[in-house]
Amino acid sequence: MSESVLDVEHLFWQVDGKTILADIHFSLPKGQMLGLIGPNGAGKSSLLRCLYRYIEPSSGKITLFSKHISNYSAKALARTVAVVQQDTPHYFDLTTEQLVTMGLTPHKGIFDATTQHDRELVDSALTKVGLTQHAQQPYEHLSGGEKQRALIARAIVQQPQILILDEPTNHLDIRYQIQILELVASLGISVIASIHDLNLASAMCDKLLLLDQGKLIAKGNPTAVLTERQISDVFGVCCEVNQHPQHAKPLISYFYGYQTNNRVSQHND
Image (cartoon, rainbow, N blue to C red; front, side, top):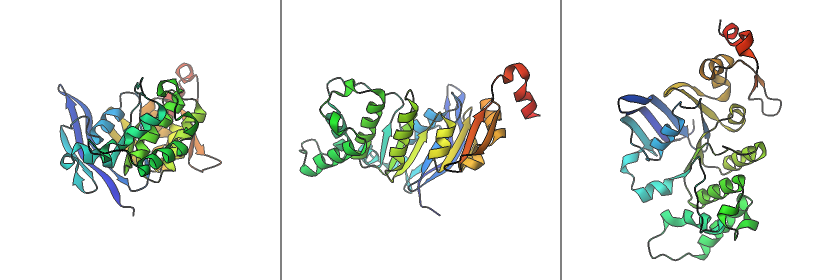
């Protein structure tokens, strides 16, 4: 059994008397990609924000490498966990290379200079994400897919042991969705990512967590989580699940027009 790098136990988060997350519990094994799936409003982003300490849970326990997350300094946490958020932020005055170089910050003191090793880390990260030719181009001039790759390059330079991604493929063409998740999977570090496309999550993730209305509905490998019944119950759609011809994980085909011919009702009976 793989070593666990992240453990979440009985996590709750309430705001103004409303429960956003209720009794979430799971572990992230070392080197695996864990996909977080669920409909809009399920609590996916809220859970991720708890994991990188942007918000504080109402109760429960988050442990990184057997150490409570509250015991990490901000700098130590940044050396352990890198985050790529859902919306690409604006960096109007930076080149792509300068943005990627920001990943060095957790490893530097205020007056530390950039070393040859640092420059090699940045060059290597740019090469991994295929942006070497855009190194001196303004970050704001990059396409959406290129911006996401630049932010992942910055995370690579950060040298984390865990990478958290909130909808990293949001608003991207399917080619870039596949490319970015394949890139992340190739890094050899532990990853937890919220993913909107269920077929993409099935193909790329070792394990999945299915959330609905802040509750954990299912967890496990894609075959155990992506069943016709659970997809119907959580997402309110009628589908058929088969085996993908390439990777043998679940391949979901959706049916259409079920609101008019009552397919969902028949499927749930």
